[in-house]
Length: 130
Image (cartoon, rainbow, N blue to C red):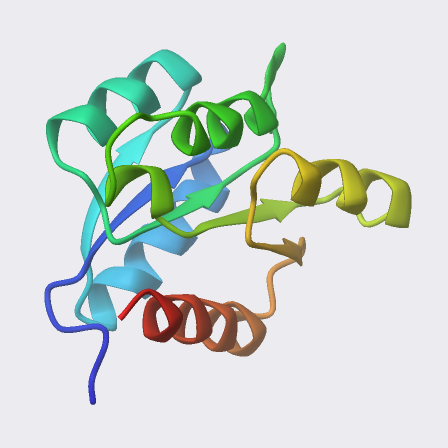
């Protein structure tokens, strides 16, 4: 089964170079990509077109990406409350990863991003969601 065929992914990332790399990689793989540079835009794009998966930077300027993950988990209606959220972050310390997972992220992929690891996590969580 090919999970990438027109599967919608929301990328929440404030660094233009990281955003460009992720979007290009996802589009080449066949994903439909929405983007957001901040939490307000991310919430708006998520609500307008529920993605199958979110790639979420944790440090978005002064904002904490974990707040977005909590927001997703608190949504009253499935399937939006069950969308997999993968944190893509430079914060590799165990305590920080635990905090991110407790906020509702399904997985943490550390920067610099190993695209093979990211692909494996995406496929794992898309498959789990069904």
